[in-house]
Length: 181
Ligand SMILES: CC(C)(COP(=O)(O)OP(=O)(O)OC[C@H]1O[C@@H](n2cnc3c(N)ncnc32)[C@H](O)[C@@H]1OP(=O)(O)O)[C@@H](O)C(=O)NCCC(=O)NCCS
Image (cartoon, rainbow, N blue to C red; front, side):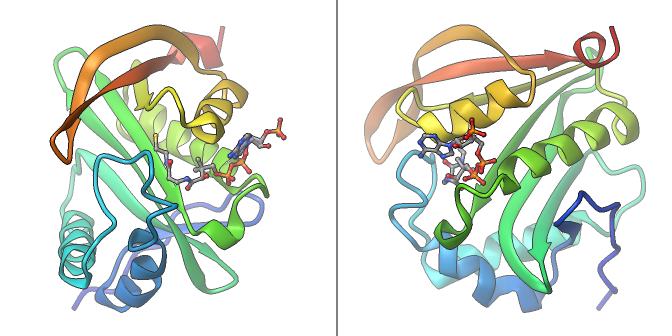
């Protein structure tokens, strides 16, 4: 098994590739219905969490990777899953997302993580535009994106099919030029 590579730090969190040993910690939050309330996935079975972690770990092995799906680690414990990925290489567009254990909400960790994801997206992945979508009811996520400098672009009507129900999403974007005007 490969040794997970470490990525640069934000002030309190370390971001690194996943390994199989992350499965129990990820499952703590990925199986929590409160955590997945606004998500398009979950609450996960243990098998679903294992599939996610193994796929993310595998994606971390390649060169010229089109995505970073990383564990957010606080004092040695994985407390969140964060990701930034290329959606269109020709147009240099990408997207990001994040999920944290409920015990660690409200402490600024998601905002720290987005700062790290933006650095990876604009520098390592060479993106020009990064988007994020979230359910209009996900006040916490909307606030994280606003604080991180994203611009709301509007409502994507009937954007997602979740457990047989169609849901709207809010679309946010940030451009390289927004960060370095
Ligand atoms: C959304 C989520 C990532 C926020 O993480 P977090 O670490 O608590 O966010 P932060 O601490 O960085 O908060 C950033 C801002 O949002 C505010 N905020 C966070 N959660 C909030 C909530 N539920 N209601 C209102 N404001 C909220 C914080 O107060 C802070 O604003 P402030 O600095 O003006 O006080 C976290 O709640 C989570 O993991 N939710 C489940 C998964 C999810 O919804 N992911 C996003 C899918 S689009």
